Image (cartoon, rainbow over all chains, first blue to last red; front, side):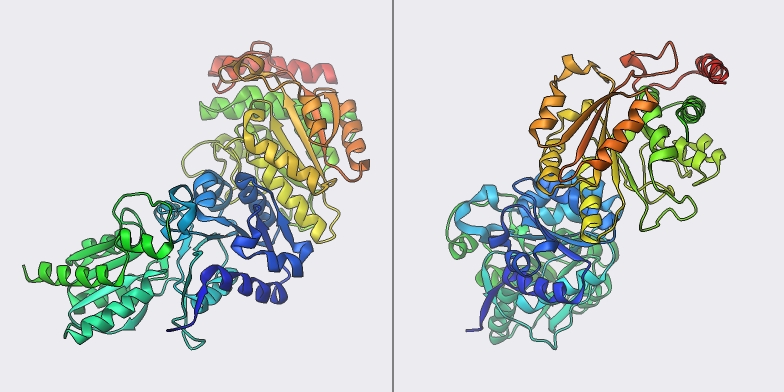
Length: 314
Length: 276
């Protein structure tokens, strides 16, 4: 079993690196710094850490002002409160003037678990993807999160980073290379492709292993950069495999599945199956049980690959 | 500048507002005219600016939280030389730099994009925090409307500015008492505002927002306050300076016709002559 670490943990560590490297980096939180893991930055760099209290609209608006004055603010809270509560602050105070704010949201998706559906953002990628000027990144493990955070700090402009609460397997080492706008082909195959991000990437790799044992050759593509989207890689893999499964811990409306479908529909219509939440909210429960209940599992991916291959032959 | 000179500037700004709105055939005259004396005093006396270098790091910052009053800001910027005055005639028109609400990406001298009410004070807070962090002595000014006192984010920002002791921040409330649907007190009563801002731990100064001497004194007082932000509650008249627009909610968001604009400009030119 691989080592596990939550993407939010890796975020907290990456912030410490950034804090040492770049005095322009400041961090804001809304009374969740122990959960979002910004607290360590706050301890090490108290003068550059601003707890804004439980006031998300002002959290994002203040981040905009700090960016307008030359800082690189990382504003953190749970995904539902950043994108949900403060949507219009993100839209009008950050994205519209293209200010250099990094919205580093944790506790996305149903793997929030016990807190239940009210706290599980399942539409945040769809909402952020539709906002002009916004970059949308969904890292799969701790190492990719580290690289995503460093890349976001180097890039000038608004970035939405979607992270999770749950410990997830470490998939990559320092040789792995994340780049904004690039998808990473983790496995080359010929019969079908699974294009995944976030917690679904490790399941996609496991599904591909099992399918290989059945004699089915599956590509696995990690699409951490949902926007900008690596259309070239998506099209290349789709042309080779002629069947695509998307996998995301998000509503199947508007997220990664929709983004891939848009590219394929316009350029190279390809049979698809979207794995994700089927337009439903989550609920309270253990993360693993919720993933099973809502069909976000290795088994669900294997079934989706079988289904999409059938579609291809029809 | 002397108070008389600032009155002359405010008069020119009011004339600009009328002519640019008449040319645009849309926009918000009432709340632009009510803020003209405040904006003239800030841009032509109070603020440290360099129109040749709009992004100068040490400049004072200005955030027009009541962004629909953009014409008052655009006129001040044009009169200061941030861009040619002819641009004013392109207000709200396709392909021109002067958007319906302030856009920092398109217009030199605009420090923050605003217009969606309630958001400007948070941005001003961020700028003030950055100034303190960098050990800079620039000040941040934010002009707010009384209608937007109903926005919850204003009070989130009010709390945070006091918490972080932002004494490099001065907010000015353009208290004209009217909003789109009528009197602010009847649409959504935000009174008593002096007590509310005091209760949020701000230093509060009440002035007549058309009395230049009082505004100058208030800005000076604000600079001397240590450890807390200052709110200048400036009592104003919506549509100030144009007889038929004064204190009329109907002139919140309607542009004057060419005949009405001519009448308004005639009144303002008479006022200018009386100022000498």
